Image 1 (cartoon, rainbow, N blue to C red):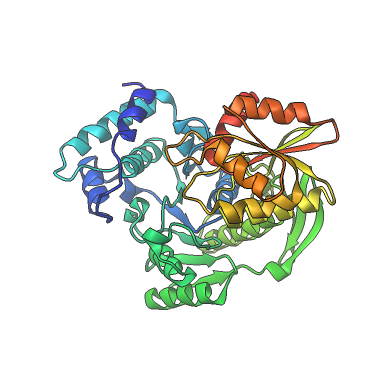
Image 2: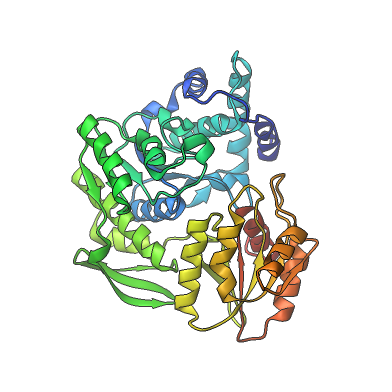
Length: 422
């Protein structure tokens, strides 16, 4: 079985309409030898910043000489990106071979495993086979009932910024969502929490008390910026550093503080992670499509932010990097997202918009999005494809302009491909 054949079969197993829980994942993993029990983890959940934080932590662990697995979702262009070891995606041969074993095991279950449950088992088997010292594991949805939560107590449980998303599954308030996400905290681990609203912090602190787990909050007031330009940003945190990250935007500095707290906590637990490795790892972090500057003259920035909180962060970052400048936007959204709030964050910065229909059954049509943007006073042109949208946006841009593609990860992966980046 090739990797692509495996991916096609995995995608056939929908999760909609299935009862949430961990029993299917546990049964599936048991059928393939319980690989998850032989690995060490940093487990990361939250609404925004999970992937960026995970990428920074994994990069530093690799710089420290540890064989490091990284499991993230969704992928941008190729499924293999979801399972990386020291920055390299799972080879096609390994994906096909391991997925065939997992799919066969899943077929033996009375209640067949879902798509994400199959993915979880594939990742665990690959990380064990690759000999990973530690795995940085991103939660797919929520925390308590997410397939990844079958793992034993992680070294560190990390909770990023929490916003209102997936409210039907997780609850309609930040406190309810926080309770679900805090479900990854287990006795024997340490917990790190992104400093945020009091209601979230109280919920997480309560769970930590219940499990007798030490909790560390990030301290944004102790973050001092030395340099913040298109080349990246450099800062001091809690008097240590300086640290440099190539990721752009104020929000990425706060995610970096979360990564630093995680790495320092791992050190207290006996992991050999030098300060030099921490600094090098942060500086070497690669995390595509998050305020990613990919070309100059005109500047092209790609951002996969797909909810109002992400778009707010994008708007702040663009305003800081290009003060007073109007930008050309290439955008597309899913119809079940709060596109009113999302577009409201970028409309004040818009010189002109080109809209596309993302490759998803849930996509809002390019025409409907353009009509909405026009009703808000923007100049907006619907395009029949991502290629057309990119071509027209670039044709409208002079050397001093800025083109920003944003709104949906389904779209950004294709844009990166069309630009020859993947």
